[in-house]
Each structure stands twice: as structure tokens, then as C-alpha cells.
Length: 240
Image (cartoon, rainbow, N blue to C red; front, side, top):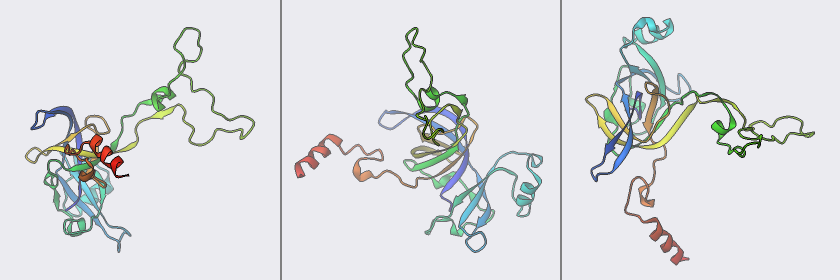
């Protein structure tokens, strides 16, 4: 099996847990996907599985190399192709072969996943919007409202230091949101409900993989409400 899947963001809504709690969720049309290529250390220098998202796309919408890449293995047209690293173990990607299907049943409720997508493009933005600068006084006559202020480059070093936070292009970047919890899995309609927000606009493509570093339950994370942080801190203070 592969530890991830491709999908398309539908939008956000809310869901009710069994205890009546209302949580914001993002719906993702995840899969079905197909293994389009298997990369190994002997042939490519690393282990990975290339997945393609099966959609209703015309073959003419793909470039000739893309069509030939899929047609040589009798695979359906796939507009989106992405790689997932091979995972060691009995449920890893070592046994994955070209043509194997990857469905939503690899996830279950309360799992933690990482979502990778491209954030919304905001165009050219100033420092207040882009980097959350406070700006100056809003009073009349201040003459300093949303300007960046001094950048510290005088006679020495007589240049702008690399990495200086300034106005510029905002958004349209690859973003990874970690440790989102799976609220529900609809295997009939291939819809995955994730608690929280994910990058990108509605209709944008995302990669969903099992969390690399999921929260640890024993420390009171991962939705565990059995640990009181205040009591735990008092216990630690008493031991010292």
C-alpha cells in the first residue's frame, strides 16, 4: 500500500462529533488514484511511487509525453501526477505495482495526516499584509501608516541583507499543513473530511499523506482530554 493519496479540495463546512462538539472541516474529493510508475534505487536512485489522480479528462488535454507515459501501461488519462516516498514495512509501497488502485480506505477516522498544496495567490502585497507588520499610528498627520520603515543598510554594508522582510509577491507557494485529524471517510463517494483548513482554493489539487510526526497521546495531545495540563504541571513542580 501507499501511505498517501491525491485529491481536490471541495470546500469547508462543519461537523458534529458524538459529544455534540462542532468542528470546522474541509471536504476533499480524494481518489481514486492509480500507480503510474514505480521507482527503485537500482533504476532511479531512490524508492518512490508515482500516483495519478483518475478524473474525467480528455486525452487531448495532456501533452504527448504524458499520454505516452500512461498509454504504454494501458492506464487512464491522469492530469495530476505526484510522487510519494516508498514506506518500509509490510504495508509499505514495496509491493506496489503499476496499475494498482489506491483508494480512500487507507485512512480511517481519527487518523492524522499531512496535507500539501499550493496556497492562494495574493499578488503584490505590502509588509502589513504579507508579514503582519504593525505599521505606524493611524492618526492624522502621522505620515507613517503602512510603510516598512528603516531597513538598516547604511554606509556599511551598503546593501540590503538577503532575507529582509519586504513587500513583494504573496502566496502561490507550496505549503504543508501537518497533523490534521480525519473526521470521517466516505469510501462510496471518495470524500474525506479533515478537521481544520488546508491550503489552496476550492478546486485546487492537494496531496494527503499519513502524518510523519503525529502528536503523542501520552502527553495529552492527539485529542486526548484525560490529561489536565494544570495538574500535570503541579505534579512536575512537586517532584523537583
